[in-house]
Length: 161
Image (cartoon, rainbow, N blue to C red; front, side, top):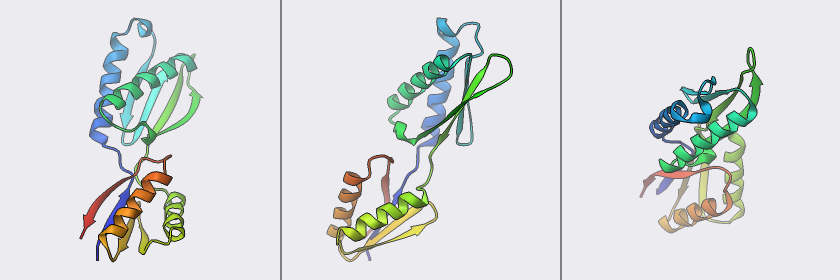
């Protein structure tokens, strides 16, 4: 029976490269000289450190540009709140999304059920497997998901015929 998986996975190698390039640019930019401005990545969390909210927004802007150049969708970034550190420093933690949340999976399942397409969907950990009798139904389901779900960068893999 034909099937495919709907996933939400960022290319973590490209994300790390973008963070490294952002750190290099911060080190060379004149407006960041003599400030504690920094960026670092650990697992799937990117930490921005700066003097003020404005500086954090500047670093975030550089990061977004670097990610876009490396063709990583910026919708993978889940921005956190600005937190005060010791002294005058502030930091922000940005999480890199990996996997589809349960609510989003249920929303996609409801979308497929309401569309009256002859496909079934099942939640498997952080993926959503869609199966159907015909390849055309699966392609219609992919088109429907792409059209209606725009707030999460979804991709499709493991297409089996």
